[in-house]
Image (cartoon, rainbow, N blue to C red; front, side):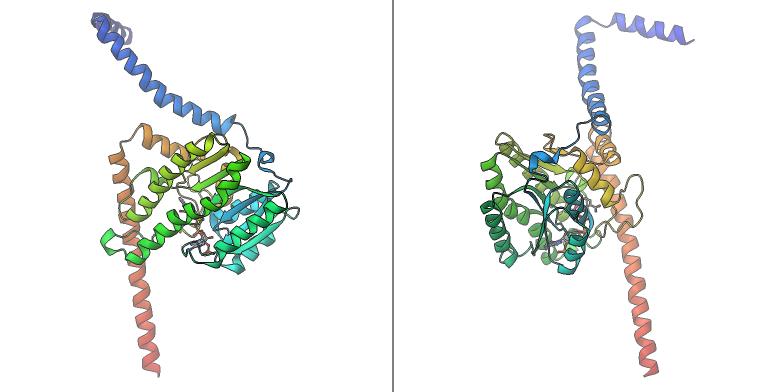
Length: 344
Ligand SMILES: NC(=O)c1ccc[n+]([C@@H]2O[C@H](COP(=O)([O-])OP(=O)(O)OC[C@H]3O[C@@H](n4cnc5c(N)ncnc54)[C@H](OP(=O)(O)O)[C@@H]3O)[C@@H](O)[C@H]2O)c1
């Protein structure tokens, strides 16, 4: 049966006129190269790929890394792991007590500085502190050669655009976009002058796929991706590497996912992957293997429309769950208030 079928197919192929046959072959080879080539390059990256050597950024030789949003989640892990790689670290965020805790967890053989900075406020004293700190380091022939633009904010829970306040929209754009450009403007010129530097921008899968009910957050990460890649191309030939990190879910306060799984890593595990393979010339890449698999499926197998539907359905479910939880909490608070009033 099988050989007869194969024979019939071959007979049919032989009957196809040559120009059409070669056209189909050409299209097939290109499509296979795109799909399987990208899959193989992913596999290679996470198995035999070159590991990052932070010596080129001055690890243990006076090189500094500045991490925004270093008080929690992914940023905290960047600070700790960069210190373990021998980078001195500048920790920036709003919550001093949290930054002190992170500072205590840094490797003991590196230096650190803490800058209290609200990145959403352009007039905040922290901006001047960073400029002054950079001048002070340069005067000692030290350098900020790694910048991790990590501070970010998202929605409290999925919300239709018309229900999101203008204040919340502004906060998301201020933190996720404007602040990233502001801090990059401060740090980048010295990197360009030295022809050495690495800028990691915390992108998101919602910047790869437009996600309904997270419209402003999704738009902010879409902006970040395109801005990062475009500036990255300009900076690359001047010796400075920009990378948009396409991040899917990571177990942190922002994602509200407490339990890590194969597809939702801990911040610790996620950052370990970033720091193992960054600085290799990719303008945008997906650092965690399971995230990379999803990103590959979205790029090569599913259509964007399908991906948007999947995300929207999951956001609808999360919204329903969050609204039910909110309602339950309000009900409990109302009952408690009634009981207290009855006792009084
Ligand atoms: N977790 C995920 O699943 C996920 C997925 C994709 C992308 N990302 C991106 O990864 C980055 C880190 O997220 P995360 O999950 O680690 O979030 P997180 O645990 O909520 O931490 C956010 C960090 O940003 C800082 N921050 C927020 N607003 C700030 C402001 N106005 N000024 C200064 N710092 C501010 C916070 O510090 P203070 O409150 O002390 O200021 C905190 O250290 C974000 O850019 C996020 O968009 C996360």
